[in-house]
Length: 144
Image 1 (tube, rainbow, N blue to C red):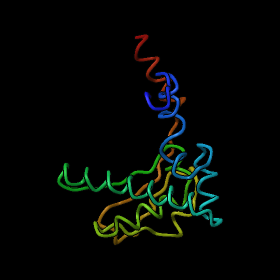
Image 2 (image 1 turned 135 degrees about the vertical axis):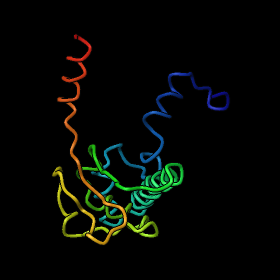
Image 3 (image 1 turned 45 degrees about the vertical axis):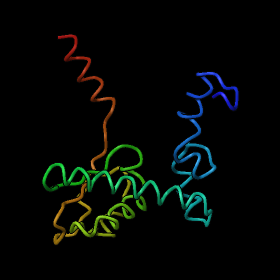
Image 4 (image 1 turned 90 degrees about the vertical axis):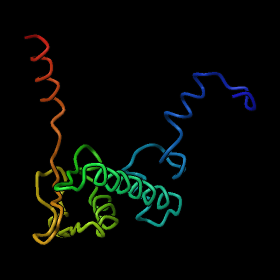
């Protein structure tokens, strides 16, 4: 802040809007665009996608240690539900834990589905979110 003579709100904007994948990829913060650019040979986008996959796989591995094992991995939300290659990349990094992805089963978007092989030590699922339903249920709970 001192060096660049920036204000708090400018720093917050940098941290919240211009860091992470956006900074690594040098692209707008739309993961679909970053992944597409990565698939089309954009080296910075590829670095961002690889870092994202590595970070998510790392969190899963760390939680497996903390929980003394893992029975299921569930991909949900925008990226988890829709980014076929991201799920594939994350699961590839987790093969050492016994994760085996069924590539054909994984070739879907926003569909509730088991996407691991029957031999996978950890079952991997896609479960789409229904944010509107969850908001309605929470609102109902609060009203009662």
